[in-house]
Length: 279
Image 1 (tube, rainbow, N blue to C red):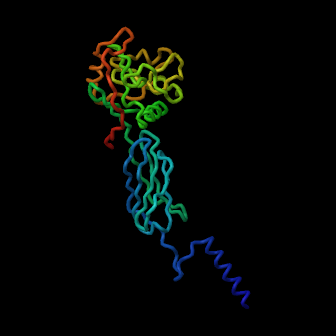
Image 2: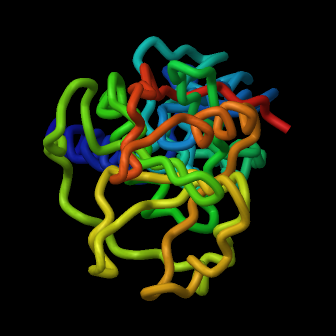
Image 3: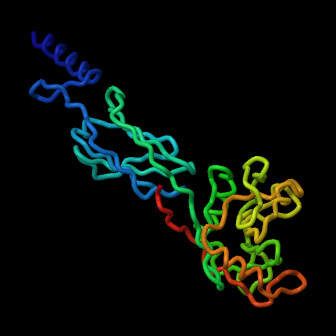
C-alpha cells in the first residue's frame, strides 16, 4: 500500500511540472496584469529602459520588441514592477510587446518613437548641430556615431576648406599633418539608394577614388552640390545641419593655402551626442 501512495505522489508531482499547479491551498497561480509600460532614455544605438507595472508580474511575463534589440530583464523586479533594457536599432519607432509567459497571451503593446540622432560639433568658430538619418543611410550613420561615441573627432581640425563648395574634417588631429588611424572602410550608400542629396547644409562622407573607401572623414556642403550625387559613383549623404549653418559659413570664409588647408587652424574641439526631443 505504501508503494501505491509513493507512486501516486510522484504522478501528482509530474503533473505539476506540466500544468500550472496552485499553492498549498490548491488555488491556481493568479495570471499577471499590466497597468502601464513606460519607455525612457530612447536614443538610437544606446540602451533604453522599459518599466512594466501591474499586478502579479511574478507569475511570469515576457517582454519583446521590434526595433529594439537585446531585450534583457534588470535585477530587482517585484510582483508590481519590472525593468528591462534594450538598444533601439531603427531610426523611426520601436514596438514593445508584453505577454504572459505561461500561455503567451498578449497583455499590452506600445509603440515609442525613436528620434533621429543628433551630434553637436563644437568648433573654434562656434557649434554646429547635425541630425542624422539612420532610416535612410544606416551603415554610414552607424560608422559616424562609432567615431563620435569613442571621441575620435575630439581635437581634430577642418583640414580642407573650399569656398563655395565644402568644409571637410575628421582626418587630422590638431597640430598633426599625418592622418589619424581609422577603422576599416565602409560600403558606399549612394544618394541613388538613400534618396539623400548633396544639397546645402547636408553632411556626407569623404572618400578616395574607390567607391567603398570612406572611413572617418566627413564634409558639410556649403552650397548645393547635387552633382556629387552621381560624380564618381556618388558621395554618401547621411544627415543635415539643423543648427549653426552660420558657423559653416564662417569656416568657409577662412583663409587657406594652395592646398585648401586653413592658414589658421579651425579646430573641432569635440563631437558628442545631443539629446533630441522626442516627438
